[in-house]
Length: 337
Image (cartoon, rainbow, N blue to C red; front, top):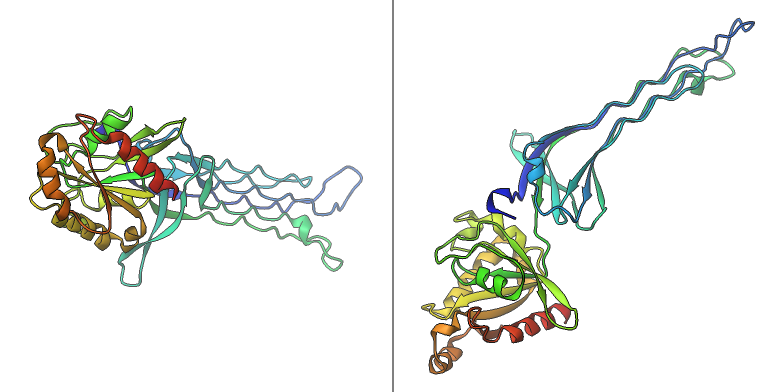
């Protein structure tokens, strides 16, 4: 997932196909002067469908395919022959994709309405249904109307603009300010190779890693771009990354040991999440004090009383490996309580 290849938001315009018209045909055979109605039905128009695919991690394949148009159903013909249904347009999307329809109110202001989300492999979500094919004239024959000249037209398809957003599916989300050591931890506990440097916003998209615990057990961890004050209002990388946290079962807050005030930093991070979505407070939270290779045991003892209350905390160093196995056990336990 290289930076330029990770796309977690795309806007598409889609149109489903029209249904084919039914046929107003009459049987014409040798020695049958007045054959009855035998017009066939029209075919169904193609639908626009999202389908979950675990091989996809990003929406980049839709960045240059923002128009998705399905074909129309074929018209019916004589001898009660139905027209062919059009092929559906099935769009593969990564698991965790949310679809929202863009609508306009009476004042011309745009707003969105959630259509649904795709969270499992093979799961389908219909964005737009194809129009039904019209019935042929043989359906309308009655004792009083033996030769109906009427057949149904096909139903129109639908069209609309949709926003597709990817919310990364991970068990544990790493929450912290830029340069808190999130990428270093992910690299230390998994095979993921996130970009790591000593400056803000090195991570510009979520990185995922599979963390092995023991006895073949594992969980997925997501390194999410760092939070700054005002992120819920879109400052910094803003809400672009906050939505990824909504999917995580456990949030691991990470604050470096050289912070001026660990409890205050924790409260700021918590406040940003709360203002973005208060439901995030319902998730299980743990706190890791990072970069503990730069402090000694005496300083650690002095820091302990100043840690925020009501959250389990642990001092770690991703560089020296200190307390990393214990952290993995804490996370595993939190995920399964």
